Length: 541
Image 1 (cartoon, rainbow, N blue to C red):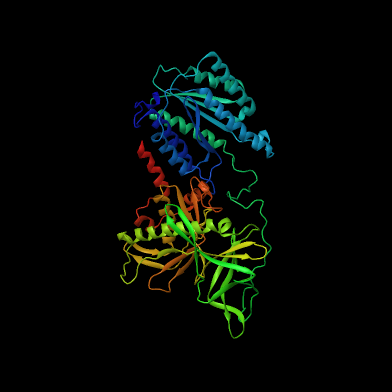
Image 2: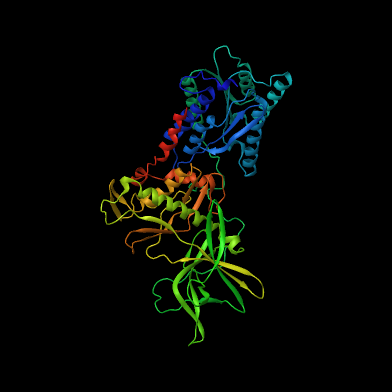
């Protein structure tokens, strides 16, 4: 309960001081001065709050600005307990370290190559569990940890409290660690924010010398964390022939609604409040009786194959089915798996539908931003639009096997990938962007900056809970005003995965924060640059 006391200069309470200096003088210091090639860090951080029981409020979180933000916000969402039981917290620490050590050992990591495990144990006085039995249990817990890790254990005990506060137990814990081969240190920081800051800064410098990888030992040095389709078998396919194929017929497979197949076309509809449904609709073209799909895909991604697709109608003269309407694009899984509208296509349609809702709100925000108005009143900034989804379901009337194709309008123009859920940003390595620009009230802006700003805008307006990324499509300038027509987006959520296989959860959000660079569009929408956005949380103290 004493951690609520407002007696540390510059902070609302002792709890705010502890979290604030941890964020500002430990996390921020390393982020500002020691980034590696990818902006990722070898260490990870877990935070355990000491109450009647122990609660791991953060577990194995990598060093980044999102971690900084969460630490800054934490004291505003928790209330210090009247009891602080050391042993429950030490049990939690022991369990987490033992699990990680065992996992690394099973992967073939020898003890000499193990990472350093560092414990910062912060308290403002004598523990609540201080009986003789508690003391014996505490000694055993620390001995077990130190005997396992030996020199790989760094133990820092920090006392936060006025002179005269009882930190005898903290001092004895450090002694046990040192006697058993670990490295321990006790620091009495008093009630000084300066002393707290200095202590965390010293710890930061020490840990920098011990930096090593806690990422998967199976990844190469230049690889970033990725999601893959482990355990799935890819389909056997040959890509469509490219080059001069004018007048050459590509092999197709044709399905006709009738005796052999039952074909239905569905539209995925967003009813709001996270309610979705499939609506049975007519074929796109009058008189259509089925469809044909080229056998060889013309495009492929990590999850889907893309084929040319057309509806067909009955030709009374030739007595055969022929193409009708515009050529569209059909998408299937790249893996061998069940492909009904519910089992495979629903996640894609839901992501596309939610992205379109967000794009409409973003377009409205752009229209209302004075500095983003076009200098030439005859034009206006580009809008973002995600393609409308339909699914063609076809069931074999004999075998009852059901399959489905996701079908979209074929996008005109040059197809471009603008960003990805792994942190890729178009032009980021080369330092160049698309040459197409627009003159706005705030200055000349590359059109594609609106696409990058959309991801940032979603991140902010979802209260940092999600982003829409993996943005790809075409810039359509056939109409009066330019439109980015986009498809196959990914939504990454803080508490995912909620949006299918491409939801890389917090890693996807971190990848975006790592590589995004703000421009005039972000500024015109009032969006702060990502590091500033997160660093400003320090004002909450």
